[in-house]
Length: 108
Image 1: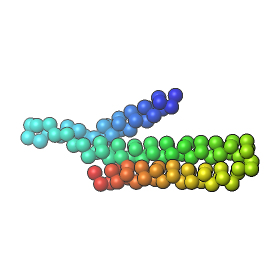
Image 2: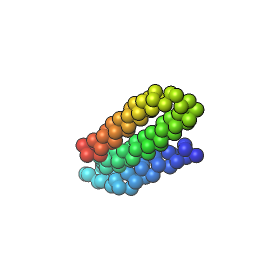
Image 3: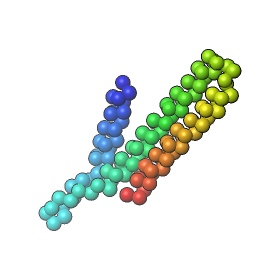
Image 4: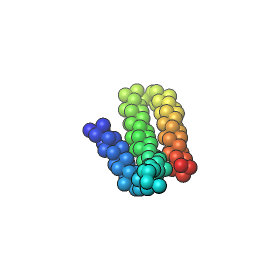
């Protein structure tokens, strides 16, 4: 199910990028393909995919930490600290991916 959803999102982003791209512009009888709008569409799509991937990851970290604390309450401090550090790393990676996507969106 997850694979179909991810594949559908990628196909939708690619379709929107291609639909927004007047790909074939005639210049002196030769076809010239302008890939800048495609890059912008993919940049915007990848920003969204980064957030869609990071959100459930952080939710899963929190849920697993709650289950671990329920099983072993005396280790709650250690589990909580590890949960915060791991969630911060996932959030940092997600933010980095969003920034790269935004750079692709505005600089191409």
